[in-house]
Structures are given as C-alpha cells and as structure tokens.
Length: 112
Length: 115
Image (cartoon, rainbow over all chains, first blue to last red; front, top):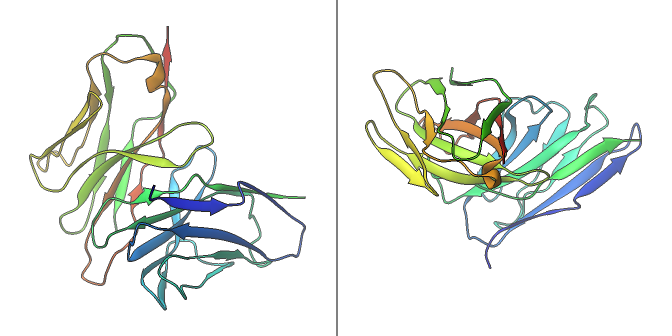
C-alpha cells in the first residue's frame, strides 16, 4: 500500500542536541511538507519542497533544517537553536500544486 | 495573508444529532478548501475538498459547500455517530504562482459524540 511513513513515533532529545525526524513516501509525489502541531493550535508550516534538491521556508523555519536529496525522502532536523522543540511533527506530501496533502502518523518529540 | 477561522471547541453532541462546524477564511487569490480529520495519536486524513465556488465536497455523510460570497466552508453531517469523535481542521491552499505552498489551517475543532 502506498503511503507516508514517519519514524520514530516517539523521540526524546537532550538539551543542546540536534535530532533528525524521518519521512518517507512511496506515492510518487513531487511535493513534501513538514508541519508542527501544538496543543490547542492548528498546524504550522515549517518547510516545504516542490521537487528534489529544492525546498522553501514556511512560517516557522527558525531552528529547523531539511534536505531533499531523493524524491521519496524529506528528513527534518530539529537543531539546538530551536528553543521550544517539544511538539507533534507531521510530514505530508502531494502530487503538486493545490492538490490534497496526504499525512503521515506523526512523530512526538519531547525534551528530557 | 491567508487565514482560516473555525469555531472553538470542544463541541459535544449526542449520537444522531445534526452537526455543523463553522469555517470562514481570508485568502489572496482563489483558494482550494479542505476539511481534514485527526483521530487521537494519528496524522490527518483528508475528509473532503472543494476547489471552486459553489462546489460541494462530500464523504462519509459529511458535506461542505464552498461559499465565495460569505468566504465560508461549513462542515455538516445529518446524524453523527460516536465514531465521528475526533478533531476537525478546516484548511485552504492558494496557488501563488511560485509553487506548491503549504496548507493554511484553522486551529481545529474537537468533536465529542456521546452515546
């Protein structure tokens, strides 16, 4: 079955450490996205990528970095510069412009 | 800029009641509109969509009509079930000419259906 796989489901980070969240899709979608979800708030866009080797900042990119070396993969690194990283992170993909986005099951990141 | 406003929750209803969750938007250009549903501990699932004015999206008994004159996309269902308990997000996307921008989401409405 086609879909989006995020791993791990739960992730713990010590203060000052970088951590990378994985997102893989086998839907052959060109566009991929990372969102952050906090309690009582909607989703906020961190980064998105339209095509391999290209990505753009979203609304809250500070303290995060991404890469898009393969069409199937769009990993997100939460750096030590992100002062409040505890959140639920969701990855999504879409065929292209203005098309519905398909979401993974998310990764919950917590600070030890 | 783009924004989505939806009614605050939680919304608590009895089984078989009629459901309306209000959603209004502001957007530059002509947005596509979506409703997503999130069950506990999971990602979002697309529930329905509409891409132009007067379109009606429908799925699993839920409906929403794209109203350009009132900039609204209210979600309705005639008879809710306990299994409909979830968080519902209204969202929009606008083709800016620069590419596939991300979705703009409302804050979500937590729906609780009691037996």
